[in-house]
Image (tube, rainbow, N blue to C red; front, top):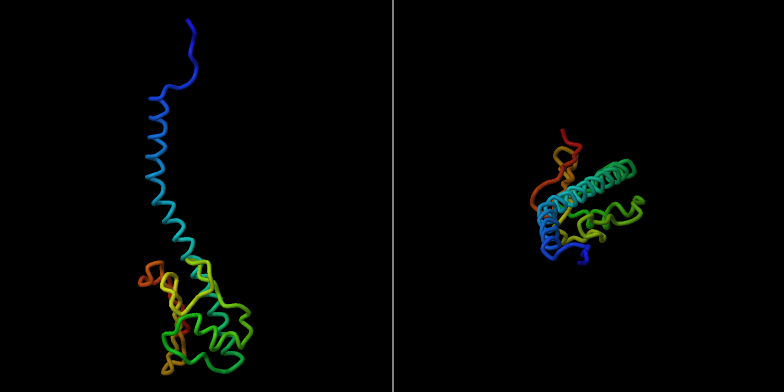
Length: 137
């Protein structure tokens, strides 16, 4: 009688099933980690925009005067003039921001009555705020 070596079909199916279950449990966690990393990217872009706005203020003695504008419009109308070399990239799309972005959008708003600004960054859904930076009290 000959000895057979190797795994049976049942053993292989059980192992594949276990791997499938582990993948099913870990995939949502992995996707959540990716979104958190992209939200951190939005915060980084917000910080860069804040520095550019402050540079604009130092050179022009005023902040960009606009309300509720997307970061691309802020860049095109104000920041490119002070040497902000390239329009920022949206971490969620991997492409340069556009005025119509919802995922990871960044909105700039100037408050003339308090001579200050706020910059809001949004999550993937475009409605929940990741962070707001401001120079207002």
